[in-house]
Amino acid sequence: MSFTTTSFQLDGRRALITGSSRGIGLELARGLGAAGATVVINDRNAEKAKAVAAQLREAGINAETAIFDVTNPEQLQAAIDNLEAQNGAIDILVNNAGIQKRAPLEDFCASDWHALMRVNLDGVFHTSQAVARHMIKRQRGKIINICSVQSQLARPTIAPYAASKGAVKMLTQSMCAEWARHGIQANGLAPGYFATEMNQALVDNPEFSEWLCKRTPAGRWGRVEELCGAAVFLASAASDFINGQTLFVDGGLTSVV
Image (cartoon, rainbow, N blue to C red; front, side, top):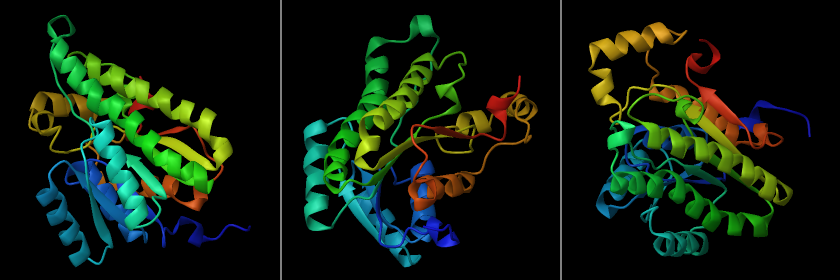
């Protein structure tokens, strides 16, 4: 089939984005919705998810909800099975849900380590497994795992986060190894430093912001809407022969020393 710009269109596709009631997840929902996808907003809180979906519908985006906690495998499996049965196929999965906890490595408490891994790594595994079972039956699907520049680079006080995101990058490659033969493309999208709620303390820190702008070739923080083009590309037919890759959207941060 010859390439056309319609290869980037997502009309008729359904995209589930975990942790999408705010931040990067919500912006990705807007981007995928603008490209034609029906987006499924996920949160543990039903009222919050419903309110966000209503806002998106007011903006002309087809939006649904799926209420589950990515750390609860039984709950998420039931929710995904119900979504597939009642609403239709999940064509695109974006594993976005994530948390951050900061402390010196020698002082990092075990409970915080396990909480972070349950969301950032276990959640990706369990959600992908639940959705992929349906994708395998259809012999098609797109999985986008939200990685990070910390999938490749380390910084003090966030060792567990970096470990979780490095593991997600390798899990993405393993999904390719296992599921590519079933017509599933699994790729990572790795943001650099973006001005989000999770990073607000860093945004408000003049010393850190100055360091970041000097360290990043683009010379600034990223804007969340700048992630949408990469997400649409990885979710669309335009990327059908791209698999197991991690696309860094970081203003050049990981390309220089």
